[in-house]
Image 1: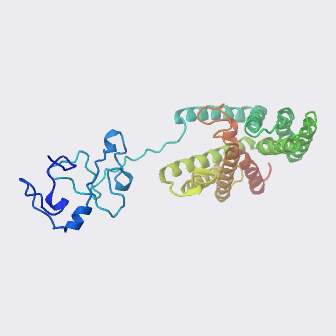
Image 2: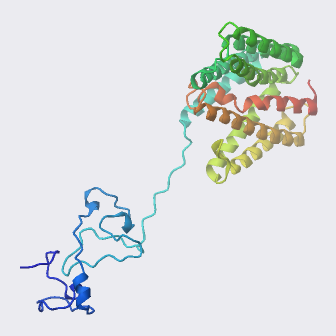
Image 3: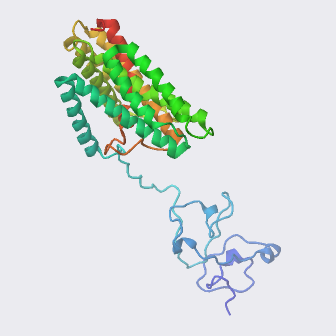
Length: 374
């Protein structure tokens, strides 16, 4: 009767002294053990290999497997003579295949984004150079839609009920007042809109009044008031050229940041706010915007010079990046990716205004300092 737990002739050198007699065909005996050690030696139990039943085939850490040693510095017991391991452990020194490189993705439908961007650009440019009043109307419509997206998200995600009606009416009036009466008209319209928000909210229960009106005043300043500087740029004799340069530099800055960051981006710019933005992308935004600014100021703006365009491009890249980060902070606080879904490949109107809104007062001010208000 064979008493080996392995089902094969016992290895003489493994089991202890060869007092059971020689075994035909056995391998040469190993080091001799004394009788006491032989009595204390216990056979290893047979444990099924879980890897054959769908386990982790890539896990080469023996301590994590049922058939391996319990400790990292413990050697596994030798298998009986004549047996062939069914699932041999991978060699630690064997070269492992390198993982396939992951392709970079823009994270959006690039075709739809380009198509929508070209369509919007055509509408804006056509209204800008044909009739100024039509462009002011386009800005007012964009402001109203942006306010609707912002207040809707605040209501959905935070339970903040900023009154949309006074914001929409006051926002459109603010843009028109900025075009007709300049900065003075914009400030007056802003004050009246804030007052309308305070009064309108009084028609509802007092619970949450403070947070609702605070969000309303913030929305009035963030969207329509900043947009009035675009309308004020338009009042100059070369207003369409100024507005076109403002739009072009902002788009070029965003494009340079995307192109350079996507290709060479390695160091995160603000990982807690916007993980996709890199320092290399910021360098691309500054470089592209400064080059475009120098060309625009030299050939597009009356009395402008190339060095003024360099400073203007630098300021646009900085303000556009900060505006993008600011809206990213808002969206992270709300727990959303986009402010809306109106524009395929872009998100909502507010997702396109994030860089434009804070850049408008910067461009307006620098143009007034460089070449006057016109």
